[in-house]
Length: 440
Image (cartoon, rainbow, N blue to C red):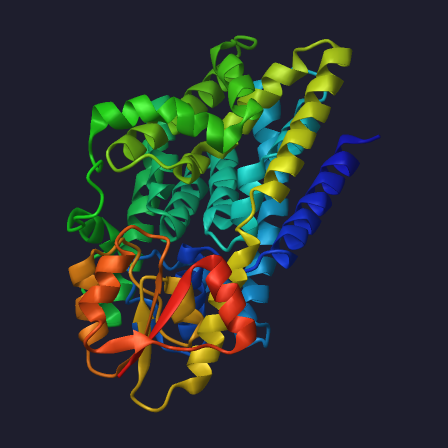
């Protein structure tokens, strides 16, 4: 079968797989509801509100036109992520071929290994921004390998609009071939300046990346910036993020291909992408999802490793990777009982009167009640109590599974009391550990 046909089939399977996982998703991710809220604001023409969160706006801006055309928010995000996930396969295959020009089947091996990534598929289905980010990174990496530095810089700048790590795309090529790749930097700077100008124009100052200041002020991440502890945590997070593909990639990272100059540049650029992404993660906190920012070089190097195996072993490894990924993606989905957050939020939203609001420590409940999602951080008891005391707060929702729950409820007891829920909501709320307080 022609390689193009196989790649097309893998891309189609990737799109379908994301939709299947999304169909069985009870709720979007917690970050996902913020992206959805932003997309809703952009679609409504409310750019000031859409740019007022700490999240980069790129993913939401891509989703917004589909919302404006009439798709529901979640459906629009699913379309964007599924298509981006599928489209990434072609440039990824080109990267693998550049790493192993003399290896058989390396393109479709990269496609299958990318498709088999359980965490990759799940974040695509749970309304994270990684699929759009990885598509831009893949296209930009191909442009860099073809020495189209203006496209490298432009795509790096666009990736920055989705995730700040987009700047590392251009940086990896500047380090890999410094004599010429510096020409990408003005285009990167233009992308960063354009986002700063957009935020300034809509009343938010000239800071293109407010999430950095937000994280700097956080008091709920004691491990933030602990370089040694974070470096120690990387191997475990690496295995959680990539599974067996991550182990295969390590072998590919150490293997040297034929000594052509093009191969050397490709290896150096992808090496730098992995190294820079890990370095940035270590300056913040280690989470397995953050490592997906270097998924492209990981999968490409893993494909090189598999392509070097004898045919029988190659088939065995591919089958094992696909089974591991499919089972992991299906079993690792958001807990089904989180549907309670959707149902309780929608029910509370239907009971609100003008000037009333819902708050608490469950951002999805707040979102489904029609409110702006909470900032992406953990709150202590005093912070939550202050949120509850705000004018207009009618309902307060929290999880009794968290250790602070008894102290929090006691703190609010004078002003709030437990609210009886309809029987259908009461049973699912009890199963999930949701408590709804109503102002007395």
